[in-house]
Length: 370
Image (cartoon, rainbow, N blue to C red):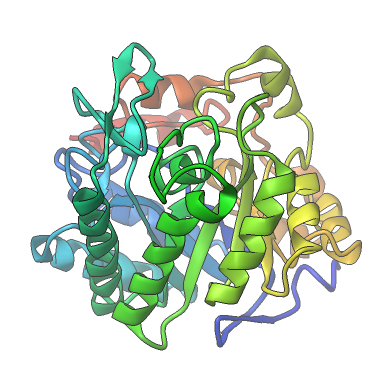
């Protein structure tokens, strides 16, 4: 069943055995200080064993503290982190999936008292500090150094986190980039920093695929929208990114009532991926509550995307690919669109679990959390 979903594809010169990827998802499973924990290793072993072709590990910071969302954000900022990252890459690859690590700087959404950003912007009661030009250059170098570690650790790809309203996206957004210099103003200037990051990362890793988590629309009236993001997508494709993993929204729009309702619908971000796919010639990944094989196959068959990203869908039921392939969609343990328990747990600094899981599995996760 679903011939397109289970057909191979080449991405960045690598062959993926099917069109299924695990999209990056922060669950609070790393240890305190961002170390790779046994709980994190077991989680990604299970995700890789699911049958997806590519597992993208979430949000590893290029600058601990100022670039980290929480104290449990994974770290790729020093060589001390290499042994844990090597373990993580090996666990994923041993289960037959390609391994990718997403690197990030949280910018104004970092947990720091005064986070860094393109401009001074109020963010949930805090004012950010505008990056000086030397700090911008240093941050570019941090991304390049982190990407080099990703390659050294044995991952197959690296992904730059340009989504969720983090630092790369903050420079692109007309809402958060109010700089008066050549990094602000028109789109050609606002895209300068992320393009510098792409160039530096590609120089650092050589012939190694560099993907990009791509924010297509902030879902805010004064934020980035498709008119400009399509132009930026073309610039990224020309810069040589291996793929664009398309998403919508930021922390300032995710919890708006209309967006909450929108996110309950199957495939609620597919339209964004379809719009970006028309603008580029690199593979496009889409995500957003793609709950059944029928929905996912239709997305591919209709040319709206090239690959399917499964995040909570796969986490809730790691047997999703097997059940879909066997035509047992009705047996899938589905994420409840009305439930936000996992989100609430993460916001409280606790490891996420799915309320649909058997009680024994939930207890086991809590017992492993330290």
